[in-house]
Picture 1 (cartoon, helix red, strand yellow):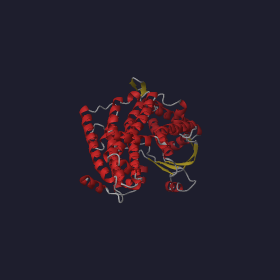
Picture 2 (picture 1 turned 180 degrees about the vertical axis):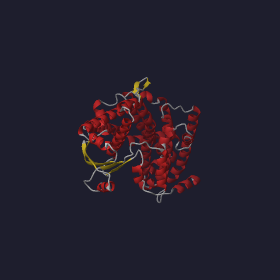
Picture 3 (picture 1 turned 90 degrees about the vertical axis):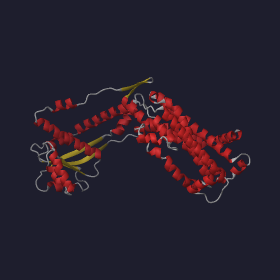
Picture 4 (picture 1 turned 30 degrees about the horizontal axis):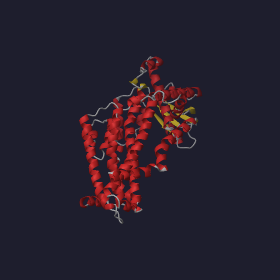
Length: 484
């Protein structure tokens, strides 16, 4: 055992003492934080103000021509500036829901508002066109010309009438027969048509559609004797203040929901980074020592099994270092922004167990592959099928986190080598209590998977570590298991 520990210490010291490891483990978090501070402080994320200029053509067949009149008011400079202020106010509300209280300063909130609701002023002229003759098709052709109108709005004389299910059936039949339904749609009650230039962005198209919708609904209310402002006030949803309360303090429910959604992927990424970073170090170390014949010198003093275990333990300590550093930074951040109480701290012990499981499987694979090849290029070819299996939990983390007690999540928890990655997503879900029998059973399943992978890696390592020449295929490695 002393020889194994000596080999492990040598492996740990050789990796942890490099500048690349120190920079990646300690320097990257500092660098990312610095970049974000500089970017936010220098307004790099702020979208510049811009103006959309052009013309909107309205073919309004109603008697009062209320749509064209209303759009002229809407596109006035005063109304446009009021609209921008309203969008900024809505953006502030959304950020207040999603950003935990105290996490961002007022200046950072304003930066977020500027990003979500950039200042776009529409300097637009509204031109009315009579609906006689082929005016619609003629104006549609002008949309294709550079410098032509931004959009064309066609409002038929029945736009103020209510829609009914019968007209939807008519449209469905027309689509089945392959007809162009534009002409029918323009003539149906409660419909209008909007055609726009391809370069007009979807947000501006949405603004135009929302305003035309509002104008039509308001005109319906007026014609039926209702006061528009009174009806709109009555339809406003009541507002409430909801907060999540914990020992750390209070936090807005919106911020709490955002933290809860990110918690499973944070646990998974923490496990993934620590396991695969140390596993990659193990692979590179094994390939390098084999190609340089250093491994032959080591074999003169200790057995292949002792070398493999020493390398696995040494690089495991590297992975554990990464896990503790990044995990500690995460806990400090959570404590600083007062959402530490939302993290299931009782799951941190299980996280260490799942690290052992995940690293044991990955490290065994890396040691086996590194011993069987002669260079990194050959190792990459053998790694492809392995990564295709191990990447499955990363692809499926969303359905697993959304339904951690579902049949799929529970089944995958008993399938090594995916057990630790699936379980870390499940236990990382706040408010979910997994039965203890299931935790113990999946733990045994994962550890049995580790024992099997170490046994298989031992056989391949013993054969491949002194074998040079053409590397084996995946099927060749399986044959080594049978005959070693």
